[in-house]
Length: 475
Image 1 (cartoon, rainbow, N blue to C red):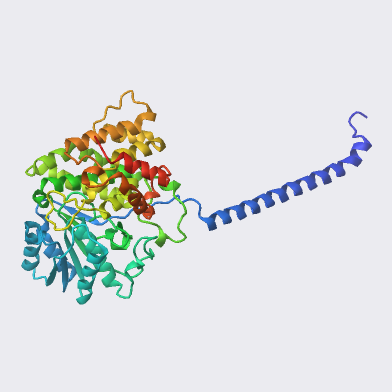
Image 2 (image 1 turned 90 degrees about the horizontal axis):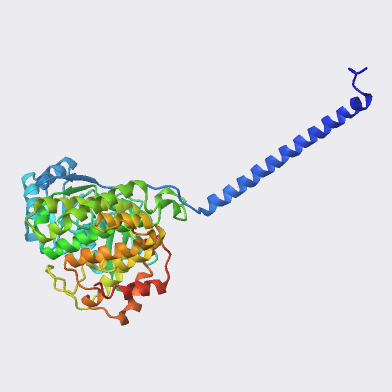
């Protein structure tokens, strides 16, 4: 009998099977319910667009080499250009870079018209004047020969001539403008940079002073980036010492700010359409390569390039650094130094920068950016100390045995020494600002959220006030 199953167990087996079946159904229902809850949660997150885990790289085609400007006429001929708009400024119109471009155009039988009234540090009024010139003709290609002011002005002229129905503020960055996407096609634009600083030949950004607010703003859209950047290092040999210095400071800050910007995967919200993805997306693995490399070149060659205009190697290297940093910040973005620089330039009183042949007071862009850099990087370092330490080491700082908590102070001191060696004015007070001006400078920074929101550290108006105060004196 030991091999027989008890009758009681025979009767209870169907019950156990039924209970097991019910348990399986319950488990299945719970899994289905959980999956549905997850689906709803995912759908809610997708609609809110909390984080953006995507970045996009965009840059102009770049051609580099000594004397490469002579090819531009052939490029235009290859494009089938019938009527070219060449933009430059009054000073450059008589100098070798513009003459080299014109010689190439004439040699290749290219029809062109010249607009040489670009304003150094352009305003909305000067942009509109260039736009009016562009709208009078039917241009099929644009050529910009000059620094950032010329290239940015030419981008705006091309944009609005290609969208004649648009209001000026339609494409200007929010919240000052409407920040509308650019849908229509633009004409090709070839940029020939003559300074080693802005990197505008690589980017879809055009900056100007908005006179009504006494602050800089701009247009940021990949649609306006040049089709081709012709980078001829021979053009940089004509830069005066202070122009070389201030242009180089722009490269320095482009590299530092893009390398330390809020990472791309911490940005929010994710755009509902790829067309709406901003040009400035936060630091990312590809931009990091360009920014870090640009910083190394600045550390090695900038002082030589400023102190000796005949140092072809140094000036050529800084021209390339400008391109590298342009690709880096053109996709990653900049943050507080640039955001704070816009009211510094926009509220200028009487300061007349050396080396600039202009009739109006001007704080060159690179100078307005770099004057706050020691204070800014001392402030932001706590969020990514290793990157700040790495930047300090590249620029010559002694990082051995430095604590991560001291990364900002070390980078700030390294920057001060770098600026002192290059004879930079002693802070905002040296260019005409006092403590009484700081509220206006803070107010001018607040609308610059296109860049300030990329700061790795969140900030308040009080923080901005403290940063401006700390920048009144550098040494």
